[in-house]
Image (cartoon, rainbow, N blue to C red):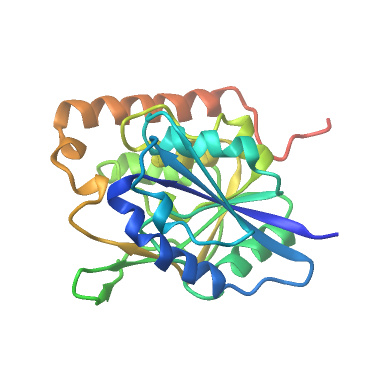
Length: 253
């Protein structure tokens, strides 16, 4: 029986021209026998600007929907996620060789781990890459560790939410991504950390493209009042989840 890893990508017209590079990085992934990937590309909107860049591959499903932001697009894609695991891949990013297999191994080898992250390299416009100091120790990430670090470091986590590889059922139980204009992926990361142990791989698991049109580079993303409100609700959600003492894996006691 073939088992699937679902790749979820939100896309809008300005970033669509990066889809072929993301696709090439997926095609370079090698998975264990019996495993395959299925790429769900969900447009945040209904335009004619994305379709020309969607590769012709039976392993790809492309859908459109009314605009609501990347978190809404990704959550809508979950309606068609028919695999045990979900991997996030933004339209303008790429997976280095081996990334999917490492994430899969981390969760398959330890049923108490709910999600995995990995080291990131920024891909600069000149084609060079740059990493960051301060990665956590390789291996398990205990509950609340990311939340505590994020709170103490000006709302910057020590692991990148764009690298998340998650058990589908856990992702669904948390409601997918937060309904926010930005930081929806950080909200998911902190909710996961409040309810389950994670994993950090020190190998590079994502090439994160830095370019003029990316959403996080726009002025609205750093508006102080909005940022404070986003961070407040992200933290409140994570704290509330932790206080309920619900978690993965669910105890049978």
